[in-house]
Amino acid sequence: MLDQGDRSDFRTQFVREPSVLKRFPALVLNADFRPLSYYPLSLWPWQEAIKAVCLDRVSILAEYDEVVRSQREAIRIPSVVVLKEFVKPQKRVAFTRFNLFLRDEFCCQYCGARSDLTFDHVIPRSRGGVTSWENVVAACAPCNLKKANKSLKASGMRLKRPAAQPTPAEMHAVGRRFPPGHLHDSWMDFLYWDAELEA
Image (cartoon, rainbow, N blue to C red):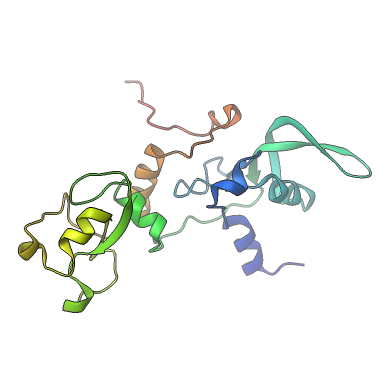
């Protein structure tokens, strides 16, 4: 039997590795039928989704046409599942490389480039800068090399916008603009990427 901590981890640990999700990922919804996360999108590999079904932790809302077989039965692979118990949304955004790039919309905060991204300390660590939301930005490799360990003023470079700690609501808004490469048709009723509300 899993304790409460284990159960919470089971419900909120999502796969960030695209290679694991290439075949039949399941969209995971909270008990209110909203995705648990947009950053990254709450997806489980099909094996985790079936495990959750067998443990009676989720209900299946949609399925793929594909089937997996055990010795006793054939099971259609879930494409959308909903948790049976509500999980409280996180109140703070974890400071991770993925979330930093998402906050900065996957573009260099100096020149706007979208390739060869790394990250840069606005106030260099050699000058007392800390690794925090307020001092780290996404930067392309050429801009990072150009700025080196100089201050913004000394480098002659400017930030597109100040670095700041994002709220969960801000990250949800940005996350909705950057869906993963794979969006199954069965997910569309539960995702509202860039949907305009009718007046």
